[in-house]
Image 1 (cartoon, rainbow, N blue to C red):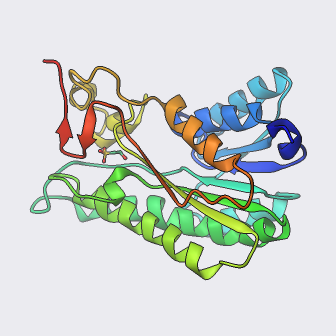
Image 2: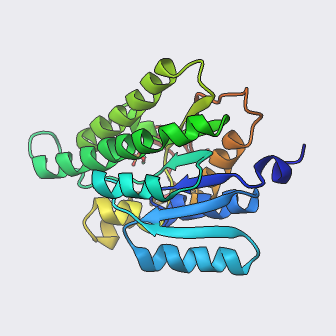
Amino acid sequence: MSTASATANRTAVVTGASSGIGAATARQLADAGYHVVLTARRKDRIEALAAELTAAGHSAAAHALDVTDRAAVDAFAASLDRCDVLVNNAGGAIGAEPVATGDPADWRTMYEVNVIGTLHVTQALLPALIASGDGTVVVLSSTAGHATYEGGAGYVAAKNGARVLAETLRLEIVGLPVRVIEIAPGMVKTEEFAKTRFRGDAEKAEKVYAGVAAPLTADDVADTITWAVTRPSHVNIDLLVVRPRAQASNTKVHRDL
Ligand code: 8X3
């Protein structure tokens, strides 16, 4: 069966679809034949992308959503006819201060979005994913969910939470027709990730990638997500770690400076 016929009439929900990895994933899943539902807080951006996909002959819709708002997530879930794939991409880092001086408010925000947001959407859509008879949950963790680094503790703690959510859910629902896939990207250069982490400081954000010949792009990660999601349904890619060739570990990066 071709990928397009396997995905016909199937719905994929992508959170954080307004930019970066989420937007690229929405595009690639639409290309693979899914009806794509884009969610994010920024309505204008997801509506523009849904319109662009629709104009290109794809099937796409936009639904403004803050994943930390449980009532809004439940209302969103109730509005869907079906859900076959959920890509929990909404998340991110705020701050790179050491433990000694990190702002607890930043830590809380990162936990809320990366862990509780993923929990909200996964809980709300799990009945539909099970009812689909062949569901897939993707959790975008990070290499930060697997090893720590200086200045990363708040984000590393949150991404460990996302990783544990995925691992535990996989244990708990074994026997049900739903796969749980964790994708853990390393250094990815997107328009917003590092800028958000450094509170809008473009210079600091640029330094993250200084001298790195080819950091991953949002499209590279979307490609791994789409590949994992489009494997035959008995194949569960438990965990896929993806880094640029220049990055051997979270703290070992080759830079041409
Ligand atoms: C992003 C990877 O190295 O900034 O999830 O923690 S890192």
